Length: 387
Image (tube, rainbow, N blue to C red; front, side):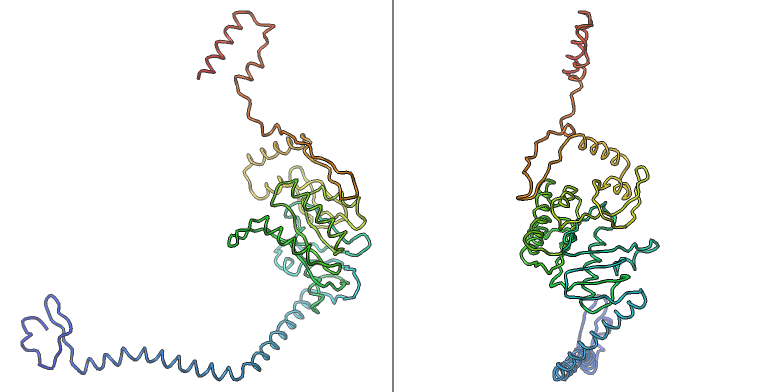
């Protein structure tokens, strides 16, 4: 209502809002209707919650049979899924026995083989027993398939013991009491643990709880610290697993020193992942064969990852320098070989760059210089030094 007409407003109208050019009013009937509309939504929520509470109470009365039904359906769902996968992907019925032997022919990783895309999955055989195959040390380049091989053995053993068919041509699985794994690398910021500390905690858990009937999967030990410390820890872990625990173990590593363990322990077998070299390029064959390797092909893998060519070339120079310097040390097992002390080597690679004036001085031949040439050279060097 405009200000000019406010005198015509009925007495039962109630002023609600004053505007610049008008007044707003409301009647008792409108106010009652407003209250009903605004209260309806709140009442709706109240009614919904009341109905929910009633339903919850009714369900609670039958919670035990409902949970039993859900568990049964979950088990049936799991069994049906395993059966469907076994038929579709040609899984085989494993032979589970009470012995120590794990024999897998043409084993496959159940997940990786389905997500490999166009590249065909390469199956591999596995033999773990007490007769020369208790500890298998697997070496090979990054991305070559070491981790996949380790995990597929653990998964096949687990699937066999849970009653599932397994991805292989045949499998004889000796029952294991536990499967221990130390794989991956990450820190734990919440508890203040570094990557290396997490790695050591996981390794300690294995050392303290594994038994001779356990299956142990170790994917790199000691990589979170210096090379010498890492090799020492890895070597000691292998010795302890062989001499004190006796667990069947697969150990993937880049520490090629560990290949020497095969000559020192009858229980150790070296395995390597095959690659094909073509100049500076490599092709991963994904095939596991007996034997050790002395190369990690890290620079070739870095090239595959797309590092700048300048970085690759510089890495080659550094590698050649390190290879020329005899920085390796021999490592022997406790009570089985003489100990060796590492020689401290000052790498020329990391020495300060030579000063150009020093280099020019070295190039001078005083025996074949005239006094005038010597004075000129001295003046030139002095001028450079003052720059």
